[in-house]
Length: 127
Image 1: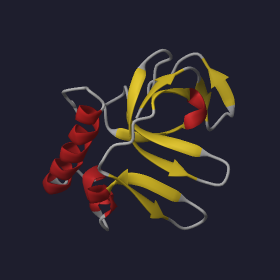
Image 2: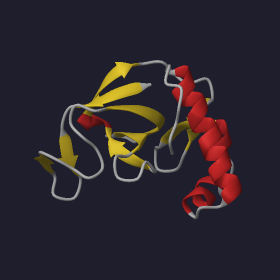
Image 3: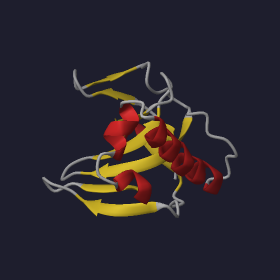
């Protein structure tokens, strides 16, 4: 799934802004996962800042390609959440280990992200 940033919404100030260190208006991003809440959808994307994945409100984007990656899995969560992520990322503790820079978790993250990028027709993932 590929999206294009069309606006920047600051979740803290609740205002639209012209720029952000996380995303860039006009830039396209590959969606690595989704979170669906009652009144909000967020996309997990590799951000401009350091290419680490971060959740960004979907209202900031338009969908360019609705292709669903083959490695995504739907996981029900608490508080009326649904997570749609690569199956390997749904293992208990894997994402926490990833953000803690665990080498094995980083390897799993990169492998699954590469699948998503390749299926979208992009041959490389820098993350």
